[in-house]
Length: 461
Image 1 (cartoon, helix red, strand yellow):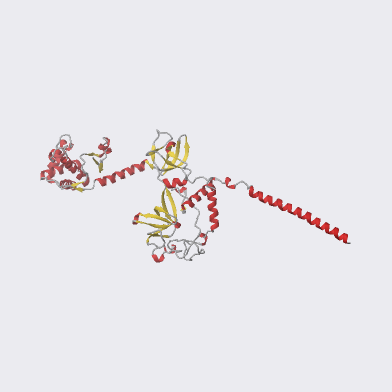
Image 2 (cartoon, one colour):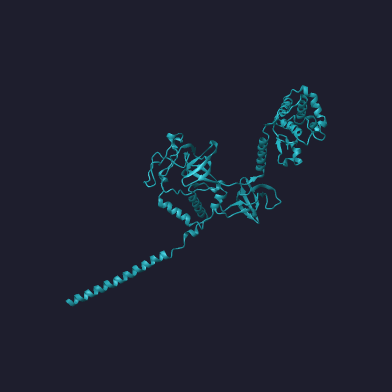
């Protein structure tokens, strides 16, 4: 009986021993298999990210760098959307109450002036500019940012199709890909263009209102996004809150200067972690707004079309003319009634159909010559100097002199007024000595002179 028990015990022991060994081997195999999973991970699926996901990831990385929402390249401002990277919702919001348009102090909300980032996230039920959906889990944000960073080396640039002009002054934009074709516009140094196509040493580009071809040698591409924005971009902000306070300093408790409203756009003066300094030029105000409630706009200088340049040149010419023809007072001349009569008649003969400013300018050409050592020193001798005033030779001046005593029309009386004002010291052309009909002066190249200024239909220099 004892022998049977002993034999049974041995059998049980051996059974347990072999079962334990078999189970341990299985566990070991599973463990090695699991360890092998970590040692030899499958190929990174990110390598198969298509171009759209790659592009979006780069936008996210840029947005994280600048810590604000950025609008999209399709808007022709070269902007984009971003991931909200705020890790708490109880920051200083400085946003006005959206329900009442933020029209006054008692209607504006400092949504978290009494809370800190160390406190649990809470929401004031009156803060209708931030809803429950805006609460973002910190770990979720960390994961998104990590993904953007890890993909940095493989993503497509957000500005991969943007080129910058590196011409000394500008490069012509032509109708065809050759130097003989029509010039449609100019891309000045530092200006940006969207490259649509590349054709044998030329880029087909779009910039501003101009589409055309530019020589490839004058366009730099492949500039890193950050460098492109910081070197060539001009920053503006678009308000995305119903009302946003502008503060005197970068502090929620500083003096409120004014309120900005949704979709208004302002130029950026400076950026820091939580605040943006903006220029509100219409009100003559420079102040700080919260970064949390704006979209960052990145503008680039663009091409100018031939027509646009002509308009700008005309406006510049008018501006220059207005500035340089401002009436300034100089010493009054001693003059006789005959001097006034002769000068008024010359003015009417030369500029009878011109404005008062044009008439005053002609009168001052005569007086400037009288003061100059190059010409005679009397009004009469200046006017009748051979080869100078054609009306003196043609008979037009004599005709006006015969009518002088009967001058009564508005234009005639204005000629007398202009002559008298010039003799009294009113001068609107400085020391200029010459004038001619504008078209005739341009044909002779006088408009290229540095001191040339146009007054209506006449050019003075």
